[in-house]
Amino acid sequence: QVQLVESGGGLVQPGGSLTLSCAASGSIFSINAMGWYRQAPGKERELVATITNSGRTNYADSVKGRFTISRDNAKKTGYLQMNSLKPEDTAVYYCNVVFETDTHQWRNYWGQGTQVTVSS
Image (tube, rainbow, N blue to C red):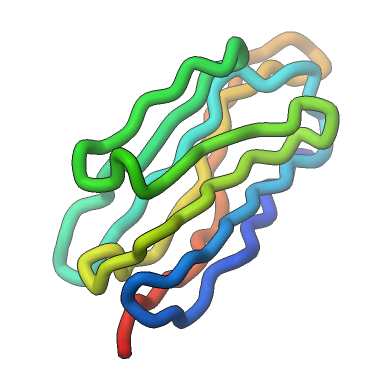
């Protein structure tokens, strides 16, 4: 059994900051890639940022320079630091993890999502 627990969402004013966390637990041998995606009302889910097990990062153009993705491999936790937030960042943010199980099978899991609302 594997669980992804997201936290850190909420309501913030434009220009503010939030940090999202995604904690993985259960039968995980190793985590390959971790990523954050978001889905705004009426829109498709889109990639926000990803990070590989070697630390290589990739960002959507819309968040470059404002968001930072990181991970703590020992804690099996990923983070998304979001600065200079804009109303258009409002969405449900989902964590995605690609990992190898204790029985050496590869899996791709999604978190339950956390709401981020940027509004004055």
